[in-house]
Amino acid sequence: MIPRPPHAGIIAALDTGSPQRAEALAEALAPHVGCLKLGLEYFVANGPAAIARIAARAPIFLDLKFHDIPNTVAGAVRSACALRPAMLTIHAAGGPAMVEAARRAAEEAGPDRPAILAVTVLTSTDAATLASTGISGGPAQQVLRLARLALDAGADGLVCSPREVPMIRAAHGAGPLLVVPGIRPAGSAADDQSRIATPEETADAGADWLVIGRPITAAPDPAAAAAAIAGSLRR
Image (cartoon, rainbow, N blue to C red; front, side, top):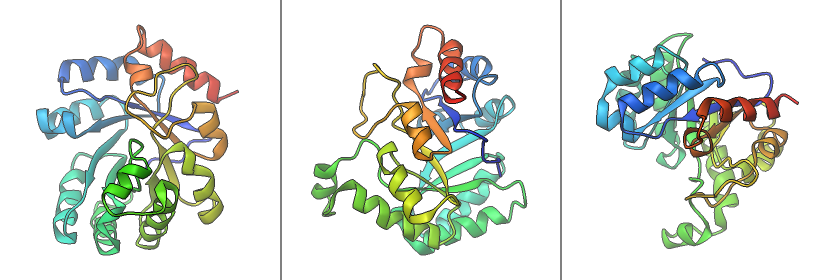
């Protein structure tokens, strides 16, 4: 698995369907970040071979958010491990049997297996959205519920918003790997995120990896933007 960084590391989210755009960003950003995130848009548009080309430049966070019956998710994890991602996401809401099946399948890949990260509540989700699906109590309560479920079932870490990092650390200590999207440098637009914080705030709260997309990739100079954020985290 990818080692825990000495200070909060940056995962640059290459949220594009274009292989040319993704490869250009990967080339520019690899010296300044610890990992590159590729998700559903890129994978569906381009397939495994295109993932492998990006993986040649930097460790990959393969963010496909598997959520299905345990046997199907286990098979998907085995297939994904062939791409040698550093991190791989599943949905905690799939339940403990699914999380355990994902972890067992990943372990078949040996010591270089990916970290299995359980997504708790998406950073675009607010209390009203949860209520519309029949879940009461708001995002924080649901995150804590799903965090315990996933960690007890064998997940290596969690994906949560910046707002939930302190409460997860209080409940589960330093052990779980916390990967945190919804990062917006001061003055940046929130875009479609509803639970956000700055890189410095999130690092100070105890996050291990910060997932940053548009503030880097939409900047006039993505490499300079990534370097500036990385520098702010080392101070």
